[in-house]
Image (tube, rainbow, N blue to C red; front, side, top):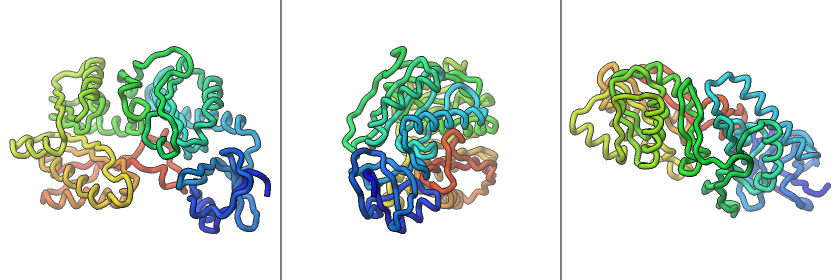
Length: 386
């Protein structure tokens, strides 16, 4: 066996053959002369299965890049970035912000690149990808031609592989405040204060869909920077709720940029507020429910399920007859069927009937691979109360 080689079990081989991108530590049988983070994967019979990134400190020991033999990593990164760019160009998404690289789904495990107008914001979430950071920056300048590249490596996942945190401009003009567009609307981005790379771009299509149906008195729960509210035209009042004062401050900027009128911001816990609103007998025509992930691992499923059900039930009770609820979960550990079952459980407790208007999922720039279920995480339903 050549250096930088890894032999995997039959179970690991089966996962790769099914299109999966991960091989866990328990399925790594043997390693030979590991001198870099780029390794070549073989089965017990020494049959070649692909090139992967190797993380000795992670339970996900191998992250497959390609089923072909990669001899020149610089060329591979360049080809992958070009392919990612061409894929997004073919989607014809609105505005000048989108996800350009979605980790394993684009053959670059552990790398996220989002575009906001003329600025790229990236995250390297694993040590192997961190070690390739300079190549990624150089190739991104060449291919995407940004005015700025910003590193937003402040996620807790970097702690798993003992990586330092970093928030900084690595190329071009040094700006932390930007403007970008989506669905013919203008939005303010604060690269330092924001979560993720700046915004939750996976809701791009859903904001457009919800905007078509929304009407009357709107309640936007876990509203973050107000992008759902700014995508709604037909309304009487918008009430945006979030526990982050910073998020609500940015929301107010976005509402002003988009000439919103008749709106309020409430800095409060959503669970407490919904109980208070129910006691006061408040009602709404449209409710948007986009909470953070309540289920971070399998052990949290029961508790997280109960949390999702409670806020959905309380939101449903606040809807007037004919009202619309857009409800979401970004928890990978709650699959589509479990999410729908939770919504059904909540609806049954209201003793009202609901009809499904739309099934909602992540925007297609957040690529989903058929054989890699981890690439699908955001699911939602748009339902109407009768």
